[in-house]
Image (cartoon, rainbow, N blue to C red; front, side, top):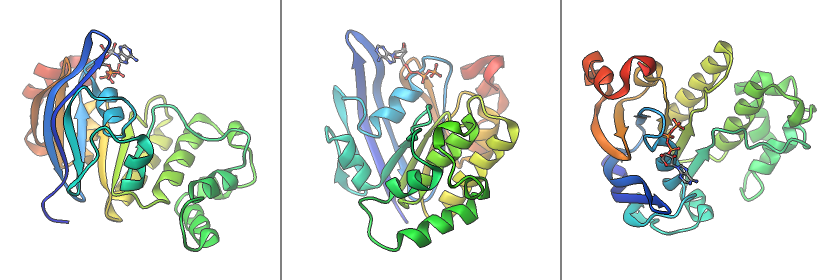
Length: 237
Ligand code: ATP
């Protein structure tokens, strides 16, 4: 898709008197990937949540494909095609893997069984465990399940908030492969990561947040190590 898909302008979020985001503006073209970087407390999760309608914003606007979503409910954001993959797992622990995937399709038309089989072919780890209760999956497998469920909706924007946090390396690889697949299928991916290197390798563009404001925005390939050290420090590069 040509042109800007997502347009964020003057976004400000407050938690009581504290400002978590201050006058954040950027645009994202369709079918690209953006890494949102920053140290602890910089406002990354708040941005991810604001872009999903999950926290109220006190100023600014969010437009998706020309549609104004400012102040709309999380359900409207979701219907507009934005899915938020939370830091937590977000799966129904007392349902099986297959039932969790079916839940993802409740409001969708089309052939559910075929869609679920497709998900199992993409994520064999889930196919092998289709009858297992989601609560008994490993943390990494639960992340993959929540990702698989979200991708079945063919979202226009996937917001992945620290999906690889605490995962085994094999699962981190699977998360990145899955997000790559989502992008190949036409989704725009906004990836929140505390650790920069891998996210930069994946994303076309990077947005660096510092105390709630955008301190740098540009092509990932031009985010040199000097810049990363300046904004993120040793630990996160
Ligand atoms: P981390 O990498 O540690 O998750 P982050 O960059 O995602 O950090 P946020 O979680 O967005 O940062 O937090 C931004 C600021 O807002 C922090 O100062 C945080 O303490 C504050 N904050 C976040 N959530 C709340 C809340 N529910 N109530 C009050 N303050 C909050």
